[in-house]
Length: 118
Image 1 (cartoon, helix red, strand yellow):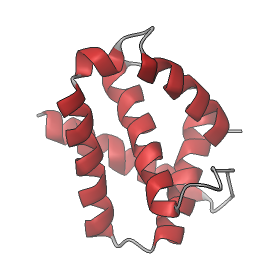
Image 2 (cartoon, helix red, strand yellow; image 1 turned 30 degrees about the vertical axis):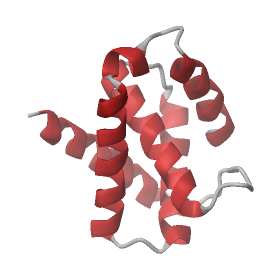
Image 3 (cartoon, one colour; image 1 turned 180 degrees about the horizontal axis):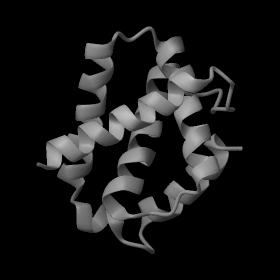
Image 4 (cartoon, one colour; image 1 turned 135 degrees about the vertical axis):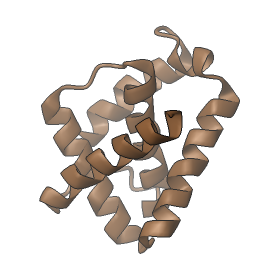
């Protein structure tokens, strides 16, 4: 069941990403695959932790994912593999720790969401 929810979340964000190829600034130090990894982490956190995300931010996140996917050159299977790897990593960290409202990731989430959804 959890896998179905995550897959639907990924596909929903991917559908948003297809709408436009508009650029959203990403860190110059990150390559497209690392940027995509970060964007997946943001999306999973919003979904699993209930972290806030406005519709405008969700749209921009989808566009940023689309751009990172295009730039990375990953095919659909490799992108899904990367997504599952991020999900597994979050699970290994422990959702209680990841979702802690005043935890390290919550602070990083807010900053990364703002930086990637301008």
